[in-house]
Image (cartoon, rainbow, N blue to C red; front, side, top):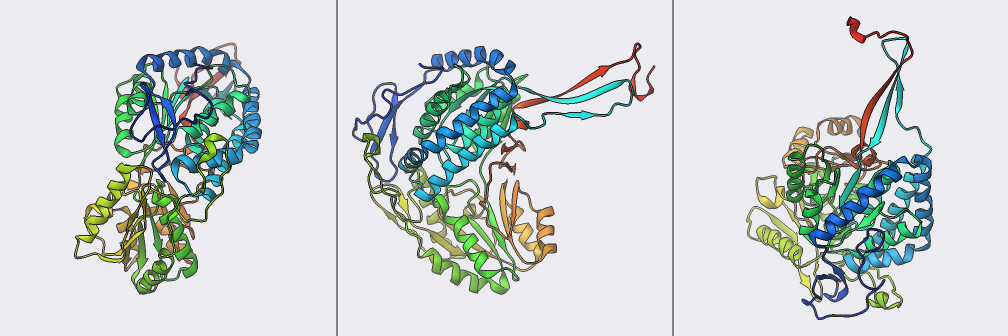
Length: 506
């Protein structure tokens, strides 16, 4: 245990074990392209979880009393190190997630931007001065850190979300942090922890706990934790919300699943609409929480759109992002040009195949591009089909893969009804040249992010990121993490020699 961080043995473990075997107390990090073991990471015990919580709670007092400017300056050092280690980080992300190399570099840039943004917070206005009814009183709205923030982060953005979207603002605001990364992608978080420590952040302020679901559950249930930042499935997020509801002090910000979409009107810039839909459907093999698994297209251009979308979808190739897997042994990797990589694991591969089979068995759906799998790894090609909007599982449930329905609509009310007719509400792209149509969608669709003349994927670190309904509880991440990890308090100063109440009370 170093600085409250649960390290695996050796900075880059090179030992290869047969698939399905692991050392006692460890788990394997698997390359989804090959099924080979990248390294072994520790399964934290409940005792270790409680110990790291104690370390973080002890560090909270000195850290929260440090000047906000000084806390933020650590993030400038972190940003400098990220720039120096950018290639290493990108290769690690591609290695353990199978993410397209271009997308991995983009994720590293996203982490860098968040570190830079968090640094800038240190010298930005913090709180508000507001007028009082009483002329002899001054009133202020201030933000105070909640305490210990536990971050349970996803595999699909293993660097950007947990270590930076959530952790960086939490640290600047004076909280201490424990990061629990996904067991499917622990390496990027490991390197992020090394970066924080290299930047000189005090012991116990930024902590890492590896492990499976029980590790996250122990962390979420700990009475020493004051706030939980969670990104993952709706079911686990709902469990965390119940845990917090049973606590008198614990809060949570949950960003969960989606059934996001792109709505294409008949006056759309056609080429823009198709390219935005292709990117939204197949980036990260459809494994982004905002991936568009529904394309809602005006009936007047429906056939033309389907033909054009299909011509591009046929060109989407799945393959490994890197040509060499010797990175952990100090070797070099060369990026490949495949459009998308594999699904993350066998469970997700099975899940996508299950939904694809539902479509094949549905006589009311017209498949225009059928999916196929290839080995080794968990690769699967795009599934694209045409259908009217109906109450069937594959149209309403999150698939989390390259699985796309193209659905016609006749009126703007139809488009909004179809988009809203799921339990989710995360992201929507609206492609039209008509401001009035865009405004009506803006005001009537259920979403956390709406992109006019864009697809469903366009997150930036300085913007809020979150959803409604089953997609989240209304506390966004990225720039708005500040609001989730702080309490807003009022502070009033009386300058008079007597007491006077507002509202005319005597």
